[in-house]
Image (tube, rainbow, N blue to C red; front, side, top):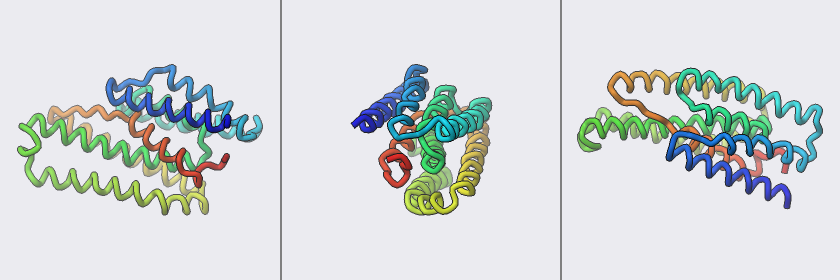
Length: 221
């Protein structure tokens, strides 16, 4: 019962943060703080001990937080997004955390493409004004992101269980690579007067909720 209450509270916080980020491109600090402060209760309810279990969670969360500070420094993620990732890393073991980061990169990339396309269309008189050579690559990219997300639900699960460390390294490289591509694309878009503001809080919330609903990725319950 207590586990269910904790998960319900986390789900409500994620939904609220995602909606707020979509509306204002901002996530209230108290929501990220609440997610982080509920994590010790989650550890206790699942029988984690201070050493080494809780220490590992803190270490992994610190690595994730520092890693995504780089994205914040490059202007690709907001401070609230980075804080929420760090807070969520306190809840998730390595395997589901890696899966969440992969999903987040795919959903965030798709959101960025959609927002750039929308902004580009508005500047050029609507979607009908865009040439096919612009529409086709955008549609193909969105379809690719969707296919990768769907494939990862099944194939990535098996790989994570078999080789979690190798998969974690590959996943972080994938996230970094997608980040570089999005950075290059964003700079190119800004040169043309298109300034996309991707609500990464939405991508984080969606990916976290998807991971939490998959029992295979929850090592605690």
